[in-house]
Length: 263
Image (cartoon, rainbow, N blue to C red; front, side, top):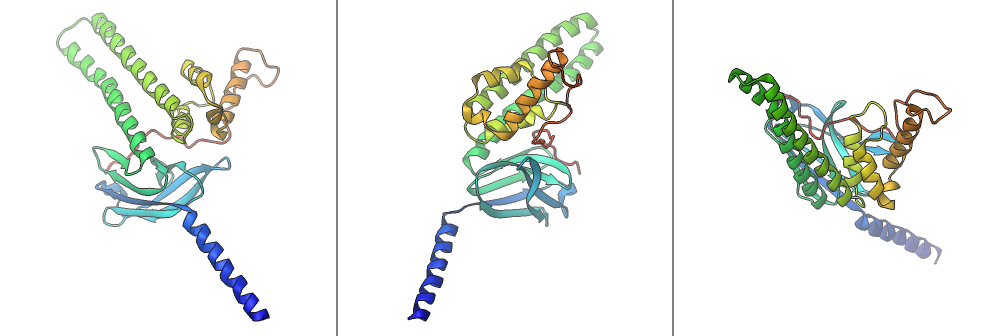
């Protein structure tokens, strides 16, 4: 009788493990690249966990292909790295995630949040290209003999319009995604460009509309608190150290939206 009861306990344990495993979410990443600098290299998926950027998974690029797979305790925003260089963001969510990298474009798709993120990135890149094109137009206009003051006046107006469109695009995307990982994830990307946490009109606008879910995100909460303290120091309203702090915890991986190594 004792042996039968022991056997039943063992079988029950196996059943519990099987049920828990079947309920766990999993991600699968199938990647391909034509960028020669990536072939033969090791890629990493890294994400912010407990205030630190930690490795989640790694793999080698073999003949232009790479693969990741694992279990998910929660949907999270991660970054694809080659060594210590961030290449591009990717949302780790349940389903088949497809990454394509070439010299002309980089994309992640196949799952809802990744599709939404890279639709936003495509629109953001279009605005960046328009801004970059202004310098080429300036050179051409100078060659055409147009007065420099006229050129500066015209291109300044266009640059301001593009900047306003970019501000609106980013702000509305974050607001539309306050309650999933895309909102805090893109907020992290745009704020990582600053040397220390600051309050810009855009950040103030976002935080004035933020949901409690967004405000409770560890990175958003600590960034905003540090930025407010820095603002007080710079305005002379704080009796603490006068200089702004250079860091915010948890520390964000500073990276552009996409940054593919050149061949």
